[in-house]
Image 1 (spheres, rainbow, N blue to C red):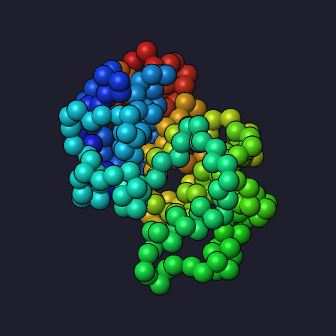
Image 2: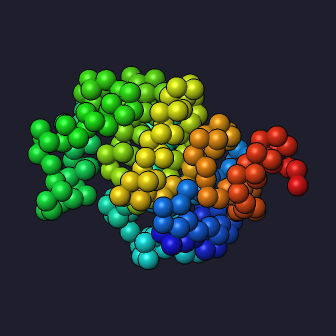
Length: 246
């Protein structure tokens, strides 16, 4: 089991946003998290990543057998936890390629997997090709002046470079056209079957992504907790009937 969440409660500005979340994700599994707006999906993602505005008040989180809640955000990232933001921030003055190389080499610090500049650029160019990005894309400042779709592609680029143990994708499919969605799903499926054996927790409102990735489990959140779990049929039922139907 790569992720085990038990009775997790959290608040933001003294307002309860998680009210006893229980969820488990196995190695190389893909789980989908659905729910109405305000259900706590993004709050769960932020809490797992260690956002300082979210205060854990109760519960436990085990990640690769370790107590995740004892780790600082950068330590969680170094341990193999990745979060793709719903609304990535712009960082003017920081080149995307430089950020990616520093992040990659920090993971493999003092090991033979570290890459020199020329080696990393070859590695990065191959990933850009897979994501149908011009190699000049990585010369731009991080998300600065990017369209919504470009920001999502940049998030996927980071994901494929870092190849984490668990990737939390917060509405990665939002705002993407059909071609971009297909490219994103191919990248997800490639990582699922790669030596990294990346597991996924994907937050979405749409079944279009589910048709392309075949999740191992689908979960529904309401009022800050997981209220129902099932297979892909659950997602299809929700899309057709809504969250209030049984």
